Amino acid sequence: MKTSVVIAGVELKNPVMTASGTFGSGEEFSGFYSLSELGAVVTKGVAREPWPGNPVPRIAETRSGMLNAIGLQNPGIDLFCRRDIPFLRQFDTKIIVNVCGRTVEDYCEVVSRLAEEPVDLLEINVSCPNVKEGGIAFGQDPRALQNITKEVKKAAAQPVIMKLSPNVTDITVMAKAAEAGGADAISLINTLTGMKIDIYRRCFALANRTGGLSGPAIKPVAVRMVYQAAHAVKIPVIGMGGIKDAEDALEFLMAGASAVAVGTANFMDPFAAPKTAAGIRQFMENQGIEDIHDIIGCV
Ligand SMILES: Cc1cc2nc3c(=O)[nH]c(=O)nc-3n(C[C@H](O)[C@H](O)[C@H](O)COP(=O)(O)O)c2cc1C
Image 1 (cartoon, rainbow, N blue to C red):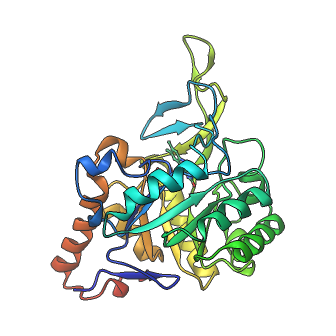
Image 2 (tube, rainbow, N blue to C red; image 1 turned 30 degrees about the vertical axis):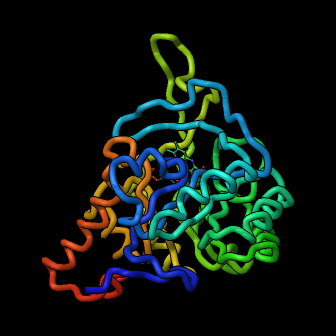
């Protein structure tokens, strides 16, 4: 049975990866299972300098989901290269480094710094709703997205995945802009901008007022957008948004995703990602599916 997929020339043993920001760099989770069970590990976004992130409270539970406004807290590229990459290299899995920044130059510097590192793919976060500059500013304007994609591609040694925001009117316009800029793949969706009010304290639940909604609540929106994006571009699509098990993941694969990422579900069940990979295999066995490509984009 063939469960491996290829994203921009990089072979993943199975189509399941972790979603950026929900898995750290895998260290805590490696106490539960071997990260070699995953197709890839996607790291938390890393910037040129350490960022402290937003003031607390910065997470809040919602029905069937959560809001976060972490604000891309990260240790900066130097510590990340010294500490996190060598840790991840111990495992037989692909390493995808998620990159964030405030300006095009910021992104390009981090990407060039990673050129000498043993990482397999880069994921460029132009869709974070929780930072004022950079981030989503690039992800909501197709011309800015095409331009940053082009610049990042020039600086990058590894293939580039552009991570798209769902906070747009037409996801196909953004998918095409990333493709036109030279992206090797796209991933979607990042979180949907939301708000929660604490009615007893009569204030915002998050210090940042707004946050990004993730978890099962967003899955149908994510499946729809993955389907639309996969039909708009020729490059591979990585699908995410509310996946907690194999059944969820299979919806994304059938909608046209070549691989999937498990995010918020990691907080509820640390085994969610390997269980999803095993469940896809089990589904294929039960249904007599020999090659995962027979179900990718089958609807
Ligand atoms: C706490 C938290 C932190 C996140 N940090 C990042 C990040 O650093 N970079 C990024 O591209 N996406 C980040 N995301 C978005 C996720 O990678 C994912 O796109 C989104 O949560 C939808 O998937 P899910 O519903 O399975 O969580 C974050 C999400 C959460 C919940």
